[in-house]
Amino acid sequence: DKVNRERKGHIITVEDPIEFIHRHHSCIVNQREVGSDTHSFANALKYALREDPDVILIGEMRDLETIQAALTIAETGHLVFATLHTNSAAEAINRIIDVFPSHQQSQVRAQLAFVLEGIVTQTLLPRARGRGRVMAAEILVITPAMRALIRDDKVHQIYSLMQSGKKFGMQTLNDALYQLYLSREVTEEECLRVAGDQNEFLRLIGRSPNDEEQDGRRLQAVGGKR
Image (cartoon, rainbow, N blue to C red; front, side, top):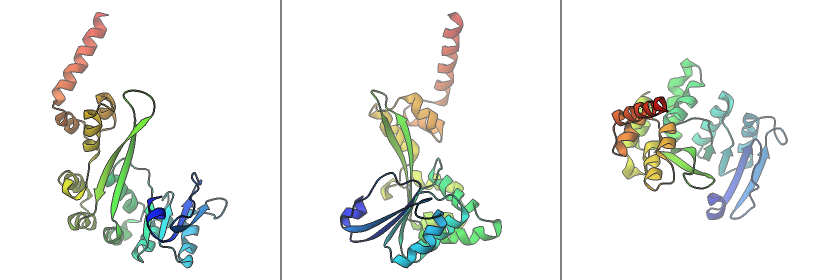
């Protein structure tokens, strides 16, 4: 709702289903639901540009046609928000590229490197105390170096660049988990369960992978004595 309240413009959303009704504030908001107002995400995006939007929200990029439409709309200067089901920022980039045939992937990398501004990956974990869940967010911010990695098919180097990109606002999942662990909002066990690199997380909290193995052996020994 931030854009709706702080900017003037026209927002179009395509969702499946619509879960929250956005009222007009500073923006005019038109929400469309797949199945009720349009046949598909791709079909809705095909006609959206005819309505002169400033911002387009795509509830989920499920197929090649929708992803291609999103890239094209972003290339024309529109602000596009979209979601994907992936576990990390690097996985999101690979998912977008891999949906295309191999002979198109080089062009798609160049397109994506040009239009992408950032990725936020959300992981929900149970709170250590009380009910509810807390979010751990991995944040990728586009810099010239990041654009080059995407364009040159070096996605495997993105995590390292994120680790050194804190001054640009970047944050790895392990960074987020570490802060939640320090504030005692999430247990060590839950952090390790979702950590992209368990050994790195153990080092962040001042432990080594050997400590984890020893803990496992102690638990087995106690279980055997019982």
